Image: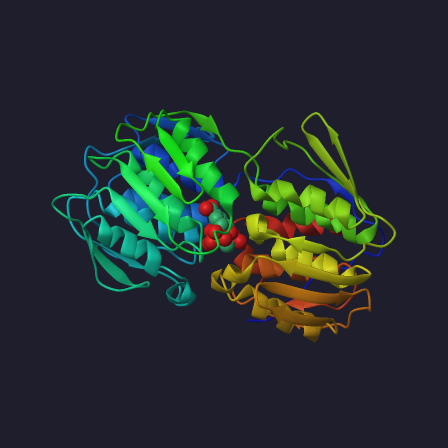
Length: 418
Ligand SMILES: O=C(O)C1=C[C@@H](OP(=O)(O)O)[C@@H](O)[C@H](O)C1
Ligand SMILES: C=C(OP(=O)(O)O)C(=O)O
């Protein structure tokens, strides 16, 4: 694959940009519409590789998903049917949210994915499905799942590797005959806002979910009410464009920012402020303005680990040391993000170290031109695009992998930066 040049910013980045729907909310809304008691109409649905994989996976299981003007009409089947070779790509939400649905199907299903998908942690959720009665052939992709004749109601999982193990189980809990109790057995639990998003979206559909303590969720048996909804814009993707303003002393506005959101991308605003940027809100518009020079910070990203590659890029151009903590589990994301970021920062001439649960980055020393490797990870493109603003001649190996969550990223970036 030939590497592609990324634009540098000869002047501060200034502009306004609307971003498409949230990956996390889209793929939950699709699953919940598929499990619901009637048809749903979804608007603002993200069109990206991860959402297309989810749509195809649900279709394979018997769900009807058809365009209805700008919206998507989802009609659940009377009974899910087992399906062969359901492709998860590299999508965590597909590989962790669809196998629980296959537990409810009339026959076996099998799951496949991209080469790196087999490296992503799956054992805890597959073990959770075994506790509910399934026969599962392996502990990683590819695997085959045979649903049981009678379904259990309790699963204990160590979700320190991914919050999606808890979310995936909770999504089907109401449709199990006795409901579902999920217990997290591990020490740490990353990405709690994503679990809160799952719980809130279930409650919004009439499902009774209790959280008796911070490691237990109890879902009552019942139906999941069909619901029409409009998906929020993806705030993690939006934050990359806001970060362009922060890095260059520019000014970028994103419209459509929700007044409150469970997306962890919303936390970018306070992190940018701590690094020296200014954040303004005017109705649904958020504007970030960059300072003359960003400053390094000490930041715990346990709740918002998706932001790590963008914050690492800002850290590289900020004065002083940045410490990113609480993200050990991102070694199991699209790639080992801690190793990837350290390798690529060093290529760019930046001193960076991996710690037990994060990164230390010595910023502000200037960058050298380099070819940044993406490791098929869309957020490594975000990292590369941000550092490239500050150093002409930076290229990236696989720009197209941004299609995982935002296919229009290259065009939108060129328009804003160019
Ligand atoms: O449930 C979700 O939509 C997500 C949960 C998080 O996963 P982890 O808990 O594995 O970090 C997040 O990083 C991922 O991008 C999306
Ligand atoms: C970790 C991510 O994705 P996934 O949903 O595949 O886990 C991500 O988008 O940063």
